[in-house]
Image (cartoon, rainbow, N blue to C red; front, side, top):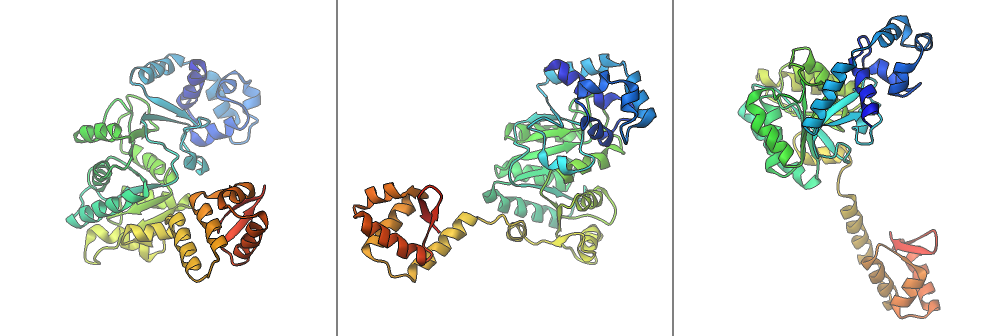
Length: 368
């Protein structure tokens, strides 16, 4: 495994080989084979060519890679390569998905529902109120909250998630050997402690340079089902993230603000230009994302249907069995009902014709 990790990490160290080129290479061979392949073979791969093939062939700086492995082991960091089953699968659909991610925490990065909540660093009281209300409303839906651990809306989203018992993941623009801003070190610890995590594409000793933040933002957008912009001006990191989410065909939402409020010009612009759907609460998000409790609505419809059907004693007995157990075999229904086989058959036929029950393969039955 260490040998495999050595080559996987090394691929991220090679000059001129970014995430797009790494993906191309991995379509032809695994990470170790990339470094053992002949230069003539690599340069014939479309999208690689002679310059990048020469960079791979010339790479010998494995000592730095080994130092990074020591750092990973010392701080119990989880390296997530593109082929790792725990790699955020939503990111794989992005053309520029990171070759390898560094992860601390135990939040599942592939849960059914993930939202990114983002906004300006210098937020208003309105943004704080909206963010806290939204996160609280999301609690019942077991949604994981992703943001960038920055000042402002990001921090409010993370803190609210921790407070309400939701897993929250901070995506960083630097290595895991530091926290930026330093004031959020305590928040980062709380996030990990409460089953959240910290995720980054950047190896140790990578500083939070300005150009790293747009790179970070693509991970925030790409690993989430929906990006929610709380408050932002017309320019800034949140607008970049929203544009990236749109480019990945992700759903983007924005809370509207006053037309006279400069802090909301970005949100209003996104809504006006159909780059974001107007959002006012979590219920609207659930509806658009089709995340409502379908089990509950199905039961409600079933109950309403049964109210308008006059059932015989035999039919009521069968419905009671199927309420107790989602699906049951015909033999089990015969045994539990205490009815004759012919009585069960007649009652079930009537129930099926009225749309109360449905048959499944293998003589199994369930309520519709």
